[in-house]
Image (cartoon, rainbow, N blue to C red; front, side):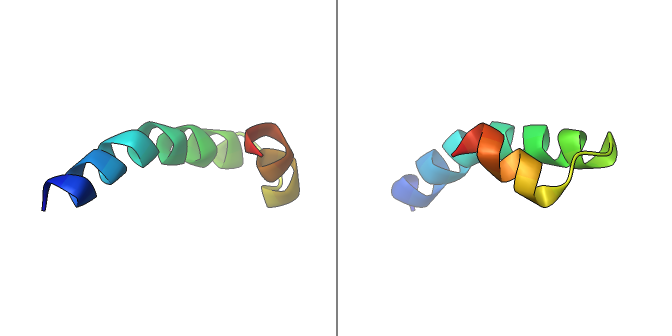
Length: 36
């Protein structure tokens, strides 16, 4: 549905950023502190 697509479009860039940080050696806790 459209709501799901909007949600995914909103979260996808954030997920990509988190993935990039994780690949660059940031810990999940550090990433969480950045985004929360």
